[in-house]
Structure formats: C-alpha cells, structure tokens
Amino acid sequence: MKTLSRKDEIISVAAHLFNEKGYKAVSMRDIATALDIKAASLYNHISGKQEILSEIILKVAEEFTVGMEKVVDENSSAIKKVEKVIELHIDITVNHSEALAALNNDWMHLEDEDLKAFVKMREDYEENFRSIIKQGIDAGEIKRYHPEVILFSILSTLRTLYLWNQKRGKLDVNILKKDMVSVLIKGIV
Amino acid sequence: MKTLSRKDEIISVAAHLFNEKGYKAVSMRDIATALDIKAASLYNHISGKQEILSEIILKVAEEFTVGMEKVVDENSSAIKKVEKVIELHIDITVNHSEALAALNNDWMHLEDEDLKAFVKMREDYEENFRSIIKQGIDAGEIKRYHPEVILFSILSTLRTLYLWNQKRGKLDVNILKKDMVSVLIKGIV
DNA sequence: GTCTATACGAAGATAGAC
DNA sequence: GTCTATCTTCGTATAGAC
Image (cartoon, rainbow over all chains, first blue to last red; front, side):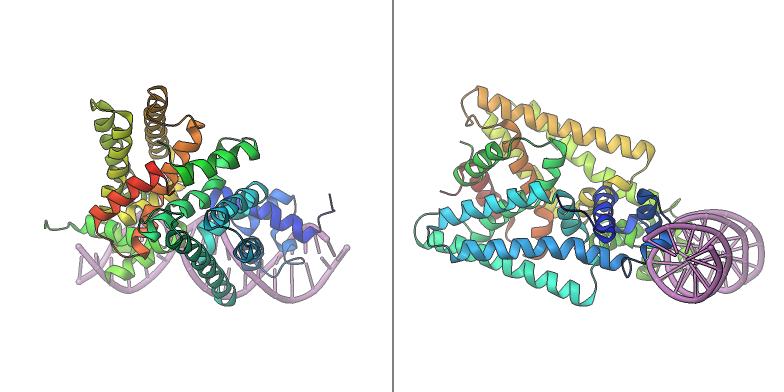
C-alpha cells in the first residue's frame, strides 16, 4: 500500500466516474465534488481534463504492450501463447477494471500525440495476436478458420471482460482463468 | 427503398454521428450541420436530443426481443437454439450496425421510462439466453462449465460484432455465420 | 419547414486572495 | 493547496418571422 499523491487520487476518482457515465458526461465539477473540493483546485495538480484521460488510458495500454511482448518472446507453442494472452487480459482486468472502461469507450477522445500513441499500441497488439493465431494454424495446432474470426472472437470477449467482472462480482480469478481458457479454446460442445 | 421522412433522416444521421463520437460528444448543431440545416430546425421534427437516442436504441432492442422470443419458442435442441441466437445477432448487426453502437455505449444516457424499458429488455434477453445454455448443459449437449462463463463469452463476442463489421468491411454474411458459429461452439482446436 | 435571434445554463479553464 | 470570482465558449431549447 503506497500513499496516493493528490494527482493519483484525482485520476482514481475520475476513472471511477468515467466508468459509470463516460468521459464526456463527467465534468470537472463532478470530479471535484467527489473529492470534496472545488473544480478550480484540480488545476493545481493536473493541466486539464485531457491529461486525466491520457493518464488513465495510456498507463494501462502500456501494460498490455509490455505483457504481449513477453508472450511473443516466449519459446512455446501457439496455443500456449494464446493461453498466456488470455491470462494477461484477466490479470489486467482484475486490477484495472475501471481504466479499461475508459480505454474501451473513450479512447477516441484522446487528442493528438496521445491518440496516435494509443492507436499505434492497439494496432501492434492486434498484429501480434494475429501472428500468433496464424502460426498456430500453420503449425496445425489451431483449426483452419478465417483467422480474423478467431482473433475477433477471443479479443472481443477479453476486451469486455471488465464489464462482466464488475457485474458478477469477482468470481475467483483462478477459476475464471481455467474456464475462460477452456471455453475460448476448446469450445462448449 | 422507401422514402425517409425528415424525422427518419435526422435519426439516421444522428446514429451515424453517435457511432463515431458517442452520444454526449455529438451536439444538436453537429446533427443539423450534417443535414445542412440549422439546429433550431430539428425541433420541428423531434422533441429533443433524448428522443433521437430513444428511437435509435429502443427500435433495435425490440428486434432482439422479438427474435429471441422466436428462438425460445422453437422446438429444437439447445445447441440449435444457440446457433439461431448467433445468427440473429449477425443479421441485426449487418442491418443496424450504427444503432448497435449507441445501444452498447450510450444506453445509460436514456432517461426514465426509456431507460427502464431498455434495462428490462436486456435483462429478459440475457435470462432467456442463460436458460438455453443451462438446458443444454442439463441435456448433456453443452460441456459443464460455469454457465455464466459460456454466456459471457458468446454474448460479448456477439455484442461487439458491430465494431468488427465496420472495421473489416462486410465479409460475406454467410461465411461469417458459418465460421462464427463454429468458432463459438466448437472452439478453435 | 427553415430561418434569425435569443434565453439560459453548464462546460473547461484562469487570476488572484488566503 | 484551496478558495471565490470570473471569462468564454458551447450546449439544448424556444419564439416568432418568412
């Protein structure tokens, strides 16, 4: 447990509100009220609303980037790598559920450099995942479906995991990993 | 091809803009500009911004409700019903991709009666899907995983299908149905 | 059915006192 | 570090002329 700086507190409270109502629907006054201060006081700690959004989204986006690079560099089968990616998503979801809401829903409200950086990270991430799947197909480990259908099915489930995690309240992480990996890879029949 | 009334035109243009930027980030002026008229003129056709959102979301939500009821009333196996639900989603996605963006991202900005109606429809829909899955498990057609994990995996893929449909530009619908059904039901290995 | 003009409130943000 | 006061812009919406 480290002490949160005032800036971290602001970001944390903002992430919570963005998660509930969306970036555009939350005002600086809303954020200030939740912290029991006035809106003007926020500007002693952050440059503006944009900075709050960037901090929330880019921080967690970098976790995905780093995690994916680790998986890619592993010396293991494609299926094993897919499993590792699924586990990566589950771990990040459990720890940063609210930041993921902003990442998924409000990334388009990033501006200029931050927007470019985010889009690049997301594209690289998808491309890495796509390669893993294609390698799996070529190696005969994965069925020869349209790779985009496979990529999309898995990724869309993983990307909305944060919603489910919030609604169904924290099923045990290890059970979740086990069943989720099975369902996504081995199917339900 | 039927002729669009001015109201329908407004709703259609608004859906397109909501899809790109989100409900809260689109102003009445934006909608008017896209139609080459002034914002004040919109109010001759609709009562306000809220009405536009309701029309977009509730219309497509009802399509899901009706479609799901048909599937539930069918006399067929649980797996066959799951397939039918997947096809229902694909059909609606292909025809109402932009409305689905609003439904997924902006439903929380509905108000009062409309919000209540939407939440009820969504809950009923999920409950029907959950029942189908449980019946499948009890009948031995579906593997005995946590039913919520199965429900969530399939539903999250189907709910974000509109994103993929927009990005990867209209893969042939029948190929999509075939591969999607296979991947979701039979897995990838 | 669309326009101009306008009311009214809420938004992000800054200046300067304490 | 927080406050009050304030600026400016932008939002939804209405009234009434054409």
